[in-house]
Image (cartoon, rainbow over all chains, first blue to last red; front, side):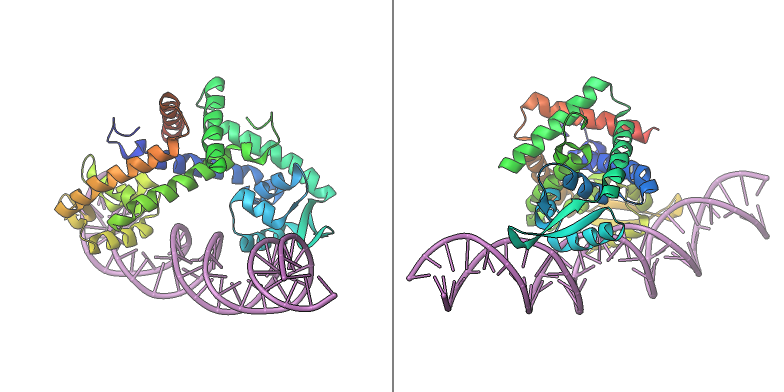
Length: 146
Length: 146
DNA sequence: TGCTGATTGTCAGTATTACTGACGATCAGC
DNA sequence: GCTGATCGTCAGTAATACTGACAATCAGCA
């Protein structure tokens, strides 16, 4: 792209930044009632699905530094939505888990997130919205395995 | 999307963040030889196309604060790629323009940027890559006019 | 068994980055 | 000519993430 236009807004970097910016705004606004933001929701989502994970594992999935994860989990623990527990199989690790209240919060937050996503995608017909998701998925998962 | 999967990596927020993250890395790496980064290139691109623009206009297009733009233009001016010039029609405004050297730098940088974009899109067939660009363009320009 | 190197979580310090609030200069509308 | 608003600028501050170090723990190996 971008060879057939000289509009600066046609660059993929511009488009990705602004799409992400807008989604972040919508998500943060939608999650505010639950006293968490988009980053928090990312952690909750990782913790809520699949096998129990250590802080480092969560950090790696979300591409955030493990030192940053400390403060993130601190805050979530203070809010009572997750707990830290030393992994019995490897006591260097802290397994992060949802509390009961955390599960409730996550379920509601997931709905709010989905609504924000849908609002972002509203200008696109449904089929094209899922096209977009699929293309991005292919792109990012190709990176991951490279 | 994301209702049919519980992989945290299927969220649009995750995909947009990581796609943008990777592109930023590729672009910054490709631009390093020219002593500018992706943000600088964004400014150069806006300045290089269309009508001459004030700092505030450039800032608005790129969704960065006008106070941040001051330091950005400072640096680019120090590198000799842009100049500031008071707009004769409105002397509150500073018109930002490419220098001759700036044009040269921009032309090379634009090639490097295009290469980075292409590398990001490499996992996709050509037709699907332009699908992605088109969908994002529709999405973002719909926001803009809303 | 004991040693070596690597990993994990943590923390203090620092760097980066962008924002807030204020200012003078300038402009548009009345 | 006022009045309110905009632009560029700057100092101060807030937010954020990173660097380097540390103790605790682990895996591999002699």
